[in-house]
Length: 593
Image 1 (cartoon, rainbow, N blue to C red):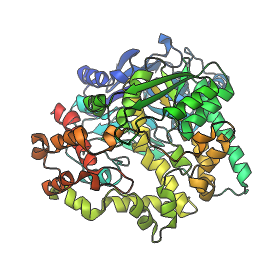
Image 2: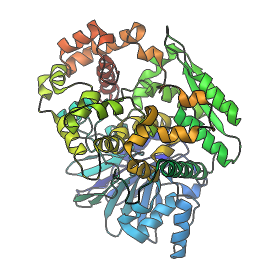
Image 3: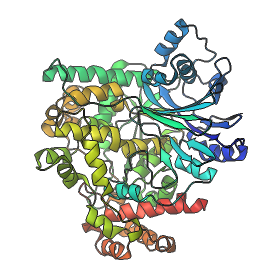
């Protein structure tokens, strides 16, 4: 897990070492163990390393294979690197390191761009082919690892974060009206390739981008999720057994692919608790688990320690409990916003940020339960959508969109008005072939598009801010493919995630399995009142916000007059959405001029 960046010039000039250094400096927190840069004619690479596999300097990057004429910068982990290494060695390749980075180099030398189909893991990487003068960029199937880029007539630049590209300069920071519509409608999700900034783009998941030295480029989608029943029917027992086998493999792979200890972020919910149970079942030494809690506010509880403590006690883990004072939340919230590659409105982002700070003092790698709710249908809105009538878009929109198009037009200045971009995008995504039923289409949309820019990005950004690698077994692509083929009614049975509940029965305390679906409790940021309301009011009434003119003042005043009444369909604060967006712009865009 690392931070990567680079530049390819199209105009015959050499990349500016100062620009590469600025990008690399902006990525320093993602990779505190080593910094490197490499230059070759029109191409420059920068790298910040978090050493997880092969801790020696032989695995430092940028990594160059002089014989093959290739150079690499890579962020992520390849879980099947040992198997690929053996296959490549049998084909005559020789290795000088013991990590997964060199395996990617040799795989590209052997199979070219098709190598991505053989990689099992989370990754974003760039390879420079010195002979062909060609840059190859790739991102993993589920978009677990980020890859942003900017382009003008003279160069293409790429990096793991938007902050690194902004530090390089030359990015058009005007607000993209289409992306703004998505952001304010889909809980801050802006599907690739757009971002909120007109000059900043991101590579879509399961996509490669080949860029020639003269600027020509070609994108290719190398994997697509289908949600269809298999030709050979399975009964419920067979589906659940297959799920248990696939999840166990995913957990095992994510523990073994490391030369450092691997812990678990244990919230006390079903998903993370099941990961602990499966890791304990696999053995391999005492497991470190980590939980965070906050102060109660009124009747809102700030921790779920009674559940995480029970799981830790059952499996004898080395358990670490962190309790964070509520006054630290607002005081340190700006820090977390500085680490957001794009604005994130989920209030647990600050919780992950503060938890990762503590966890990084103990371990460098953790497994986390993100993705289980989307893959196995755990959210309350799925059955509501299933029971609704109308077109696919109408059923989805009425239970998911933060605001309808008419309200969007009331929210933002007329300069950002246009057609209903988000409805058009979601209609097209739902209409893609390869899904049997409406719920299949919804769950696929969640997994391959929406969660990429919400929980997945949130976990990456907040953990990597502290040089902590988070691995997400529920987004193992083989497990995701299995779950997508499963009948959706089986996943949604008994309140959702039925296969996981069955697998957990007998392994976990019944109180953990049968508890109602919970969310990361951050009561100081959940209740739109007190100091939190004062904080948001200050942002939205600031001179910077008024000068920007993004929001219509009448709409802002309406929300401020009765903030707790204006909630989205999935119970988010509309006021917080506006305040967080404005705060992100102030700290990440205004600060670079």
